[in-house]
Amino acid sequence: MAADKNGPLLIKRYASRRLYNTETSDYVTLEDISGFIRDGREVQIVDLKSGDDLTRQYLLQIIAEHESRGENVLPLNVLTDLVRSYTTEVSSAVPQFLAQSFEMFREGQAKMLDGFGGKLPGFEAMQAQQEAFLKAMTGGMAGNWSGPSREEDDEPEKEDLASIKKQLADLQDKLSKLQ
Image 1 (cartoon, rainbow, N blue to C red):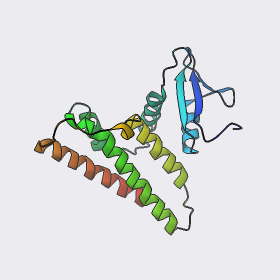
Image 2: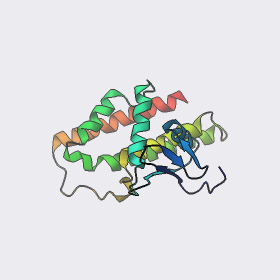
Image 3: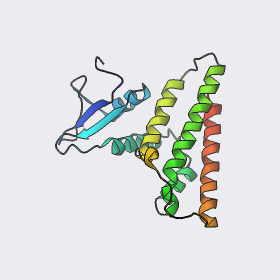
């Protein structure tokens, strides 16, 4: 790829639903896009006709395809809680919670990587997958989150959030043990 690797790789979706890499002037698949992300590239997928940003939709599709092939990163209970969060008032806290959790996870990985002398096999790929997952789950909202509009004092909501935090911590522990 000869273009600026600091900027996002622009992928255009044609009316035929084919995806076009503007850097290499060729068509790409979801697997190709997944590879770009694993290699550390930012991607932006836009509809050629309308200009709509479709990145989130395609990142979620990549995650769904990996999960359906048995590459399970997300435990069933975490997926269930994510679906549940869309129907509760706790959903306003989920993007911020996920962003903070992944940031703590990345910091922990960086510290562990420093302890291994700088190189850990597969670390870069896993880090790119985590960033893609975080973007897909938060839709870029994490940086704009301003908190709930009312005081959160319901016990069930606090218990749900505590449960989600525990599940994410367990997931982080499992991922760190895989390394």
